[in-house]
Image (cartoon, rainbow, N blue to C red; front, side, top):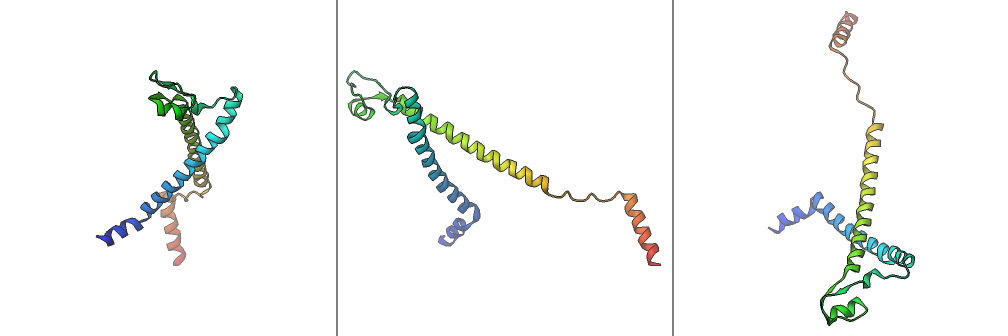
Length: 139
């Protein structure tokens, strides 16, 4: 059973998938940093120093904190600012993946165009005439 598991894991598809998941997780962290550390501060500066992560609505009268972390300790909150940040992360990640897929597809199309087309076989009458010529040449 252990040997079968080892064979399964060592197959190319499983290893490719594992590498893809690991790289995807690392790429997700890069996108999170891009959004949280670069894009959101710029948007916040444009709109007057807004920090979207601390935008929330308290769902009970006991919530009177000014930060999201403190508000969550006091009671239920609707953290729409965090949702805006996560939604922006998704849009950026989806757009980057779209650009990557588009680049790969364009590269594949270019490689297919650059391949020399296989020579079409000659028509049957030309092939027959070629055979007759070759037979006459041998005599």
